[in-house]
Length: 439
Image (cartoon, rainbow, N blue to C red; front, side):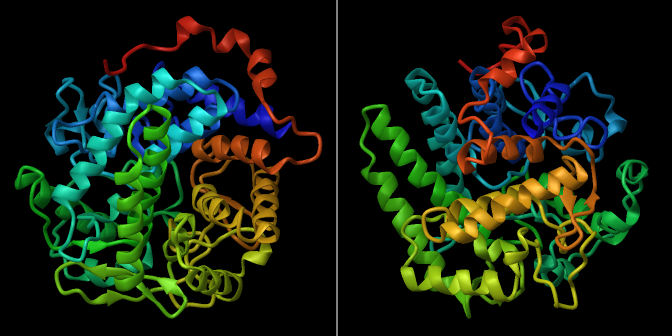
């Protein structure tokens, strides 16, 4: 059964208070991974889902940023690069972290966790931390046009998308001076190139050397990141209401960012990134441009145009969403974020289609199930052959398929997967769930 296999992956990747994305390649806690993982965990172990998010926010910085990696001190420094010695950053809790962020999908995750197992105390506990996360982005990353910038491709979550080729070309970089560990686990044909990593390292080092305050040669307003920010405000409105607080400021901010994205990032049926310095639109065929479908207040004509683009340029009737449009010179069905399908990206667009085009949402749901049935819970998939690439037993693939099974209502799949968790009781006793979470 797919659900049991998914739970087995999540149990194997659990580290006491959070879930690693992959035991071999990603041995620490990653920010947006934990958000997606919590959404799936809520379907069979709600307490574990809450601990996942609270553990991540236990490493939140004083300025509100949630770092993209929280390092496990038990993992050797050389097991992952760049590690804690490179970043030279610590949260107030004393935990070593990176200094950059990832798309703020955490409020959406917190609300989804609450819906799966209502817990007002959890919402009251995490709400101020989610608000602080959004406040950091508004104060540290907002442009005069009201859009949020990313200062590193890793902050987009779509690390080496062709959308970043032009701005990355301007980055001056020398040799990394380290051996890449990722290539011992995954074929070089499926990973970013050495040249990519040299530029990533140079950008991260330059940002670090400003005390994580000033953007370097890369400052981009990304549609996925901004859509996540807007969706977070919509989720925060619901969380605020559930906590007896005023949701109006969150509704207003969600509407404001949606309007800013339409004005400055939308063109010709797709949202595009924009260079934050020059204001030049960085037109590309990245599937990040479809993620604004998750925004509830997106104008109907924009929604219809995005759906047309998804059908024509991204061929979503095949059942999976390529991360970059097929038929373009940059498209590569096997290389990291340059064309393969990812469960999390497809899931986000599926969420945006569920209440607008249920027929297309069903095609994407079926496609995600077919991919993991064919190739297992891989990190990413060839959008045409469904061949799996990257890591095996990848956590967010397993977690989001669990959520999908509950929401999509496949024949024979129960609305609740609690019984799956009960079957694995010996692996998930309460004492095995750590309490290293913020007060």
